[in-house]
Length: 188
Ligand SMILES: [Zn+2]
Image (cartoon, rainbow, N blue to C red):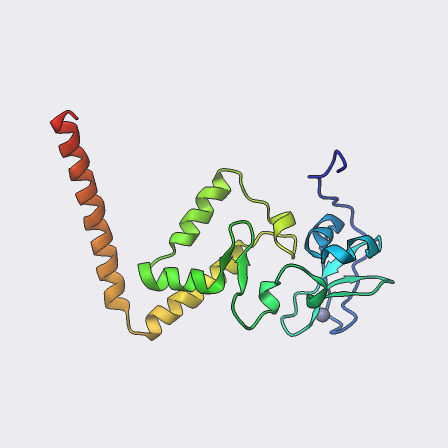
């Protein structure tokens, strides 16, 4: 392993367009491409500026000017935005899928996943540049999955249970606070 194994190169060359759908790609570091490509293909990777194709209907993930593109089948990572069937990965640092994020919102009336991720990011534990095949922060995609959960909550007409859940959570916290006070009072 080289000594700069954690450094993500930021040099920018002209970005390739996707050879399949013709869409503009977004710059992605070679280190990120190497991280997600199937192990048997790592040695065959060409050098140069890779671009990530974020068209959900296109099978190309990485384009490289003058080289063959890498498709979803060439990767060991499932690219969430190109998947229509579960599991659809959304947060790659802590392995949350779209379904998990939606079900968390349905169960709690809010996103405890977002609270978890926000806390972990504040801890400095985020590694989207490498973990996310798009090579960038996945919080936007997490937000979209939460919105999907909220729409589902409203569609089910659960606005009332949404409020009830909030109330019961608050009561739960108060009860916890009281039991802690009692324990302190008992001098255990
Ligand atoms: Zn494409």
